[in-house]
Image: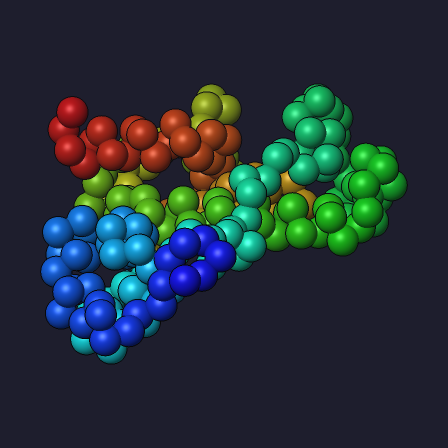
Length: 198
């Protein structure tokens, strides 16, 4: 008997009995307790029988990552939203008191998250949303509006430093149109509402 009062798998606990215990309990741990043996041994035997068994939690505990708290730089940005950010990661590092590596890592992860959000957006040409240009105005000074169904093509851009989103498009009437996307979440909601009609 082991120190825990359990014995290893022997001829007294055939593999078929282990399989029946596992099928009944649905858990390698519960089957091990029922059979008074170790869960590692149960898993080893079940895998030998062709079962696909995930490792017990105790095996993978050290591989789990705890949820990350907001980084120091993210907190600094949140507390200094009205500050004009310099177009230099080195200057951002100096202003925030956070290491260059931490600032660079944060900005990279945020850009990737934004790009993924942009990839998930509905197709503008199919959606037909009315957009206000930021680089072309009428004679009275008001910006022109363009239906995205008239686009030949378009492309989103994420600013490397302030993470702002802009879109450049080519339409039947205008070869180079620029659109600002100040709130990506709101823009995504509007597009999906148009797409679903709700």
